[in-house]
Amino acid sequence: MSSRMTPKEKLRPISGFPELLPEYRMVELEWIDKLRSVFESYGFASIEPRTVEPVEVLLKQGDTDKEIYTIGRLMADPSDKAEPTYALHYDMTVPMARYVAANMNDLTFPFKRYQIQKAWRGERPQDGRFREFLQCDVDVVDTREIPLHFDAEIPVIMHEAVEAIGAGPLTTKINNRKVLEGYYAGLGITDAGNAIRIIDKLDKIGAKGVGTMLTEELGLDGATIEKVLGLAEIQGNDASVVQRVKALGVTSELLEQGLEELHFVMRELERFPEGAFVADLSIARGLAYYTGTVYEAKFADFPDFPTVCGGGRYDNLVGDLVSKRLPGIGISIGLTRIFAKLMREGRIEAGRKAPTDILVAHTRGAPYDLVRETAHTLRSRGFKVEQYHEDRKLNAQLKYAGEKGIPWVWFPPSEEGGEHQVKNSASRDQVAADPATWMPE
Image 1: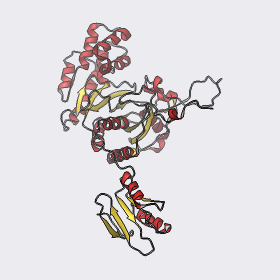
Image 2: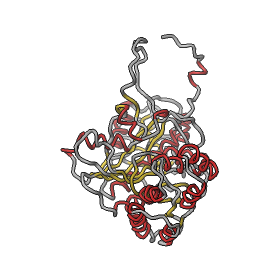
Image 3: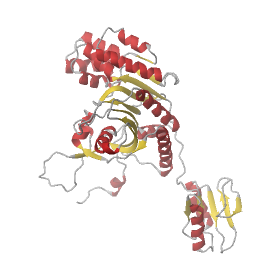
Image 4: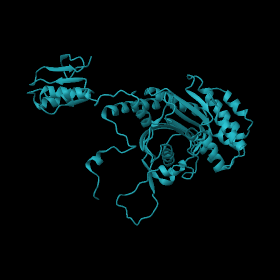
């Protein structure tokens, strides 16, 4: 197939698909290592499921069909009108649940996993929104009911992970879907799912827009809408939130259960600084699979920026695939979204352009074998070592080391048995050294 793109068009960035220069990719990799360390300190194991899932599995997420990238062959038969079978995963939760269902005989429950992987969404790129992005998830999945203590531990893990990469402070808002569904049931709203979907748009279209949608789509009257919005206005970081909900005069068994769970989680998080965790009854999480505690975290310094972490509890994502329920709870950290925002704000200092500790220079007159063996000796001792492969002027080699931020330059002797020298790129100090024993000061 011939291309009509010009060379310039072929090189142009594709909107929504970010690429980092090496000095920033180095920082991103450091972040990933720190996140892994936090996750593993709580006993979570790493998995990496396939990037492609059956379309009907991904559609369990709810109203996301317009944003899912399907998979097809470039040279597919034009007469083939069949619906797409597979698609790139939209998030990590549904693929993880499918993975657990497929491997449940070989896993130990409760299964605690973390996943750092790319995801794809066909949405309009804008500030904080990408079509391809790196996401970091931690989830607990079980074949039995998951203790409520995990509802309090999961946001703590997220908090520690974000602090570890220096991306805070965040404000994490917490709610419980049982509170919403129970409250709406007490008001006589039968379509709680759509009511939650509409309330989830509150921060985008405001109370007036939400009220209009509730009237047009659900046929709610003004008094009921006022009650719905009254719940959404309640927030705080102590038990008074529960009392304020009860003061609205709406009752149901599910509402009472949700308030008890929300109170438990907030009480467990009281030890954190004020504002770190806030109960907010407007938080809904639009994805349909959430059934209990839900979380949304934003930058405290950039409150108008989109959510950077989110998640919650779900009862059963793959009930049609296995005979057992697979309840779970987890949270996602939007690594690409966080990184891109802090980079734009000048809060990320570029790293070195390479991981190299030592550049072994090609000293004029030195045998190539000696240069190679010097690099090998240093590398075998655990250093990250580059070997300069050309006998060029020393200034060119030093310039190369300087541009890449390589901290040490090694000079082999011009003949076997001669004296090695090593130079500190920062201080410019140069001393004699033995590649078999030298250690940086």
